[in-house]
Length: 114
Length: 111
Image (cartoon, rainbow over all chains, first blue to last red):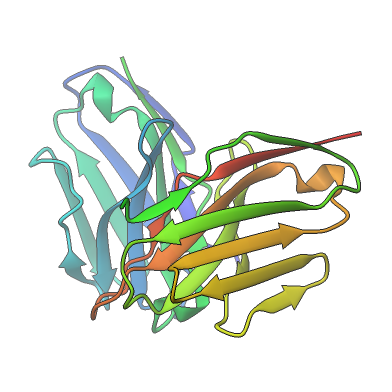
């Protein structure tokens, strides 16, 4: 199994630009999570999906952030417009059925907004 | 009380030492508990689940105390390769499937 695949690995963009992060979960996993990690705040859950449906987006910081999951094998997290304080590592994770067995994370996207 | 709280460390120990990490969580209804490991500039990886009766995996032992809302991880005979950040992870209860991560404790094992 290829694991959770995220792209791009690194993204440097200018303030005000749109940024799109991509994730392919493990085949058969029905839960998908987007996390953001910073030194100050640690790992924060932004949003999660079950069977492609958004279940809880209470962690999305503001309207500039949006996430979609058009099918079981693909999800995007979009930031428009981006700001320097959005600089962080964004992780996608997936799991099967329940959280009881933990999540599998992708390698992350390191976003820098200048 | 913070949702999931850990001693931030850092812990610096010599090879062969025994080291213990502690974690407290806020919701007594929590059902699922884990320890994750995160190497520098890498993604978090599941180290082990934590069961009510306690569990062991080689040099690693995890304990859960529901009454005190407390989880621990013990590493015996530490190796250089154990150097990483150790994250305490809890499902804080309810009908959701969210896992909440502690900020982690940095461990450095020195030769």
